[in-house]
Length: 143
Image (tube, rainbow, N blue to C red):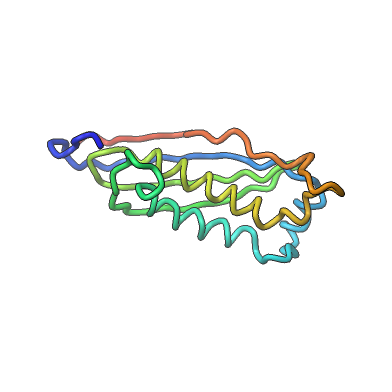
């Protein structure tokens, strides 16, 4: 890991977003909360929060960061579910990897929960795809 010991702790914030494209019937099941595995929104939110706190365990060059806040929210569009994650910390290094990782885990959780709805007769996923995972905002407040 990079030595960040000499750096000052400063407030930092990052927002990441991504989406999973789904069939209309799957989106309706999510909207109605009738997915067999449970509430997709709550499960994906909890998964995102857990992932944000454990990013350094999955990504070997990330420092363990004492987060001060994290949240995830979801928006259903006509053909996709959009996940957005915000992470905050007052530390020596940024939190964009925590936001990206948390968003990716949220999207994977959605996929895991809706697999049954998206598979075709051959067990393939002709529509479902995760895309556009990105940092949409990053802030560092110099003191």
